[in-house]
Image 1 (cartoon, rainbow, N blue to C red):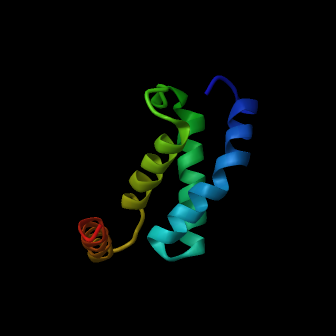
Image 2: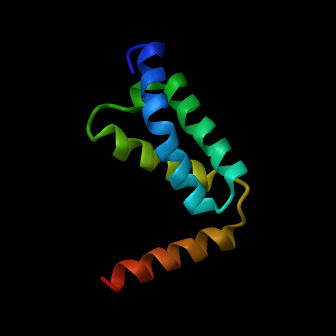
Length: 92
């Protein structure tokens, strides 16, 4: 991101998408809100981490997944989610 106004536009457009994905993963609106804050704060503090190698949506989804692993959600929940995701990808 080049500047804060650009980040504000990205936040305005993509925060609802990040929130929905985080809520889907975590099952909690409170936790999802914290993930949204973490993702966009990280982008504000270290804009160079988005190097433009992928779409901003792909980048934000990846950041959401990484923020999820940084939450206090028990490891068993992470493992169950991974198993469910793998099973659903195999049934296609």
